[in-house]
Image 1 (tube, one colour):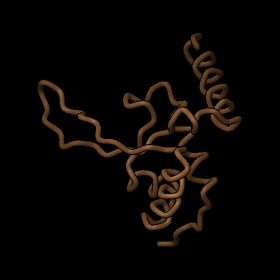
Image 2 (cartoon, rainbow, N blue to C red; image 1 turned 90 degrees about the horizontal axis):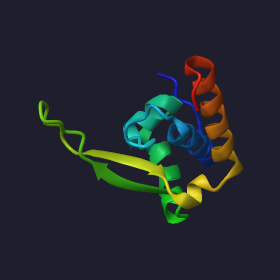
Image 3 (tube, rainbow, N blue to C red; image 1 turned 60 degrees about the vertical axis):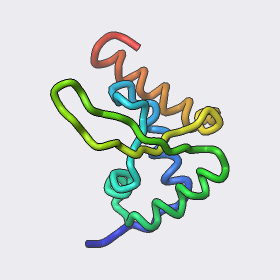
Image 4 (cartoon, rainbow, N blue to C red; image 1 turned 45 degrees about the horizontal axis):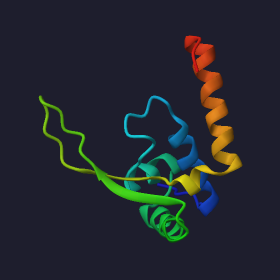
Amino acid sequence: MNYRTITQEDVYQQMATLAADAMNPIGGAVSLAELAIILKTTREQVKEHLSTLLLDDIVNVEHFNLSTEEDCSPPYWGYFLTEKGKDTDAYREAVKKEEKLLMECFGVS
């Protein structure tokens, strides 16, 4: 498989898009492995860039309990944007795109 070479900005842009997604039940949190798949790259590259974003307080990581009464799931470790990470033009633009999509599809924002 051919993997893409990515930048920290690629990781941040994808995180901003996921955080703006109104349909995401855990607020845009994504695992390292899922982010690597989305970006068509290696986990190592994603981990390197996420580590920098963590140090800069742009993203945080925590576990989410996705279990329901009917289903017992293991904890889900997800990275998500912090308030500092959301205080950017890229995030605000992603939110505008999401609101436009919701308005076009469902007539709501």
